Length: 250
Length: 328
Image (cartoon, rainbow over all chains, first blue to last red):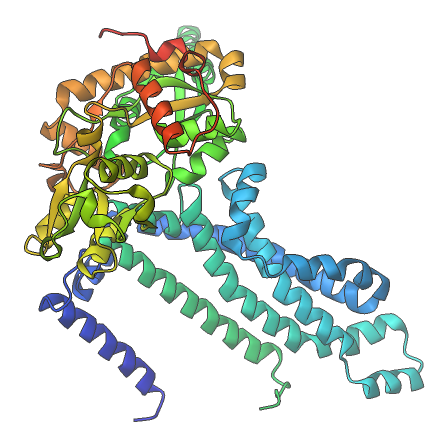
């Protein structure tokens, strides 16, 4: 019972109790539709409604912002690790900006960047940037000193040291940062869509809520959850293949 | 190919080319405008007007950006992200009082002479809430503070023996208000349609409407308008006129077709509310023109409740298009 299946079983039990409490009237609320109605709405909206196009819009924004953010994060992380002067200059501002939550950033960004994709992709990229930058910097700075010593003994050039020692050594950290960024970036994508603009799953969610169609609203929420789960699982699979040699300390 | 056939094909090609060019020229001659709206029943004249082509007839191509809530619209308007925005009177006047240079360019909605109207004060049946006096020391849910819902509710509390300063106003979004009321998280709630009717249907034994603060305190009172910035108006007077005329046409259609199945389909299309839910809900009064006295009344009310400090002059705030009567 404590095997892998137990997780799925728990989810099934929770969904069943949701269905029961709604159907029997134990919980009466417009905002607590039966799970069967949610799934029916999901199917209907996918086949006849806008849901596919809406998800596509969200995913494309997410992908663009995420890729920009992690690339910037890797570049800045390495720069900070290899050029201490740059790090000293920029670290305070990064530490000041990092704790600001995305919903607080949306209104001032709307002022300068509007309510469309530019604003949303910017905020997604900013969110994805920080975990990757910090992890990359720590990974690149924390390469085992003995490897560097061996390289020095063999008079290895700086480029080879970077490519053969520092980068592979940093990779597990970079990937860990990217996985954290993945979850955060998806959340921020949806949140930015809920606050401003008129496309994507976040907006669809709010629209369904105000249209008194809570089953369709929950359908959108289920889709977001499934997306996050799938993206994370795919990332883990890729990670296992890329750093097959890495055994994190348990 | 024979000469005559070639000539014939050439003339066909020329005709297609000229009409394509003409079509593209016509398309390019449409002025693009961006309007910030909220996808609710109140914005029917605009949304249905667009769907019916009234704006295209005036040479305007309208890009509507529905906002999940009104809060993002006015700052975006001030920043130039929109050319026009839908706003409730109170929030618009607040923004103007803060120094943002908006003007009212078309009318929006008002409440009727009496209830049921577009928002009602709901309470649990077993709590004995009948007047403002019963709400002293209690919690009253509004969707936002310092907007039209809040101020009308506060006035009602004061006029029915209570004191708005001693009522705790709690911000809860409309879709969650009835849940909060039923679960005793608040003692009363200022609920908008269609959530009012839906709430009464789901919990008819637990909640009831105590009063209609909007029409009770201000019969035929103004609720909303469309605004634009002073700079945009000065730079684009023609566009404002066209917008106002197309909008008036939308209002005209809505007033003539309110409650019909065609109306239900049209409203359902942009709100995504199922047509059945639209039957029987209280509708706002769609105004053809703004009545300056009503805006003046709101200014005085806001100054009395100390949310507006500036002594705004109504004449400065209303652009002539909002006062013009059109016939169709």
